[in-house]
Image (cartoon, rainbow, N blue to C red):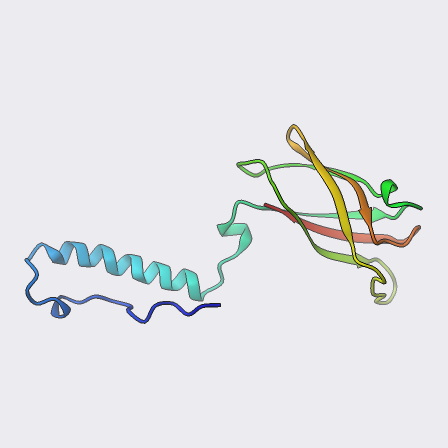
Length: 134
């Protein structure tokens, strides 16, 4: 990640020839610097700062990807254009890694996102799948 700018505050002494009213502007400018620095260095999150939605579902994988379907309501302020699979975890007594890439075919129906097929799962196994839409 890029580092915040080096300039963190502008003081009256930095611009001695400025008129007296500049103090009002400096207060607002320095508040902006402080807020921006805090945001860029202390955990911007998707949930608090991006128009996105995260959804976790449990799927029992079917014999074919076309059998792995699900849908959920969109709560974003705009219609999503992207879906990212952020986690696919097999529900088992011990960790078992996926053996192929997971991907999904999807479309929008009114205020719902519909996954038409979810690929890369082993038939009969149960998975917790987390996706994020933008």
